[in-house]
Length: 207
Image (cartoon, rainbow, N blue to C red):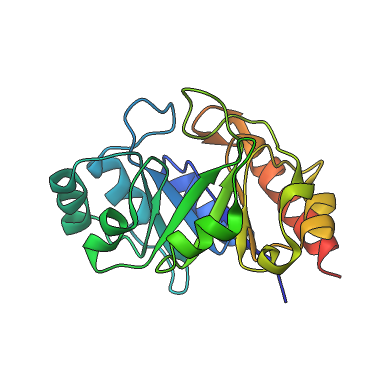
């Protein structure tokens, strides 16, 4: 099966069009104000305007208030929610949309238990743990801790780049990979050459 690709931290229409033209399956919009890749509702609307069909638009939230999420969903055509904080399954389930739950891979995380806990999630996204940072660390974690029987249903994130994505996919065989900082020229601005190289790396792994 072809590995899907999500390019996260999209902040402007040009980067969105570039990612899609190079083959990205999903685009991530960060609605977490402390992030250097955060977007306002107005920026998000501009990003998703004129998107072609069959591109999944993902909204990323970190312990956000329900009213704020509903306000965003009323104005931005988000297809999939990504919860990157301490949200419970009930909190994730509130919005009548599919969701993925990010799991920060600290020592002792039991992925079978997390998969059972978030049974209603469309999938789990595995990211690197760094205290005080909910994501976007730019660091990878030990991929060997991912159980073989779960690998094909997870989204692999954390420190992926054009240099390591081929090896990551060959080792883990995830359903999808998620990249943000690894394809940037500066925080919040994507580098077309890096996005292109990343997509080629994914293609090599799928041969």
